[in-house]
Image (cartoon, rainbow, N blue to C red; front, side):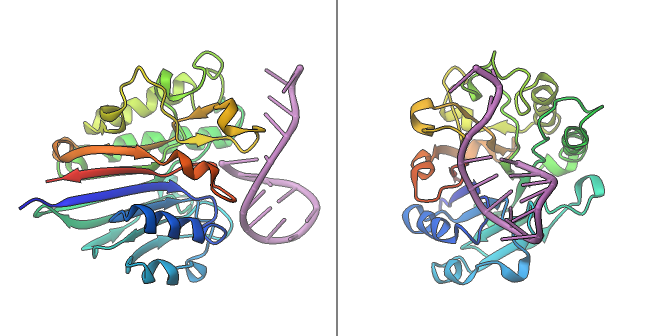
Length: 269
DNA sequence: ATGGTCGCGGTGCGA
């Protein structure tokens, strides 16, 4: 007997404003699990009714007013829900749900890593210092016991680690999201836990791959100055179950879009 | 050419 699991991740940039877009994704793609970031919504105001009506009856959320916020919508019940307060700032940037897949309990981590502001110098920019601290804490925590089991990590990591994860490696070397200090640190997080960057199993590192296009471009599609800020990782125990993934780039052209698009990964075991 | 656009909450801040 084989089991299949379709996991989506999407920085929605206000779940209340774009609940209709989430419902469109649920209807058109029917993922088993959707991890949302930047919900910008207190838990009491989360627009869950429409999601439940579409069969996503299991909802974990960690919201805060106006900023950040993560949530997980699922067709399958959770056996556990946890959150960790990275950097002890009280920010809503992490949720971990556990659910059954192929006879085992799989942990799905949903992350919203701090964006880091404009100036890539931790000495003068507290937001960039926070981002580096957050990534360092991920590196220390997401290893050993935490990664010795089947687990998936998704989310907006706000770092485009590879040269072909940005429209111009050279022009973005001093731009927050692609500076060497960040890309090196993100690769250390990956290596420390043995995490596999499964998106790059489907699209080789030599090919461009983006999940985000700025609102500031006149025409996102024509200028196509994208970055891969959203990621799907799997532990070595789960990586063999990975099948494929798709970046739903069309969603950048939907009405009143988020600046990020969904990534949907499929596992079979 | 080094700008530009969003969402939130309430006219500035974070992304």
